[in-house]
Image (tube, rainbow, N blue to C red; front, top):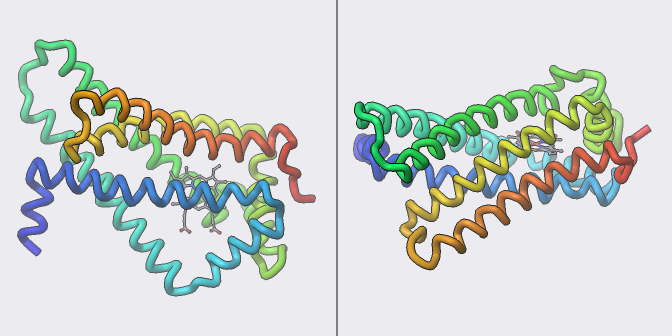
Length: 229
Ligand code: HEM
């Protein structure tokens, strides 16, 4: 186990850890969005999907614990790398491009910590029912006790909640865009003719994910998705 810890503590090991955990989190965000998009297919479909997840028992818990471990490792490694970067550079940068690189990595720490705050709020909202117990109570009244459709639509019908979710999607967009570019860098892909392509691909993927989440919140506000009665 010590070799693993030593690898994690090395500069390249830290970058590889960020890339692997980042990819896994990216996979989760894509899968979560694809599941949530079933909101557009109506209550039966979304609730059947939520029930299927809830009924997967031990498997769901393995996935949840795995996700939590990946998330914690991603955050802790990011903090370690950012501290190491700072202490390795007592003198200010001379060149414009490196100053920009520092700004990008600083904004990653900032957007990452904002997303951490979002996830904590999101769990208190939809998983633990702390922030809006009246919406969470709706989760228990549908077929098989999984009326997630009612919980989500009554939540996003509240303008402040829809705006909060929408605002966090901007942060998610920025974080994913830079994250995808960093991943390409770690994999040695971000050079020469590939750089503009990676730039465009990172904008496209980040926009699809953040835009999809945004669409969910806005559709309820705009009446495209009906709020459960
Ligand atoms: C509009 C967008 C979103 C909607 C409608 C949504 C909806 C939900 C719902 C309903 C649950 C609770 C599932 C349950 O307990 O039955 C949930 C859980 C969760 N969501 Fe989201 N979500 C959205 C965006 C996000 C984003 C952007 C992230 C991450 C950055 C995220 C991370 C999570 C996590 C980590 C869980 C806990 C998973 C679990 O333990 O089962 N969600 N979400």
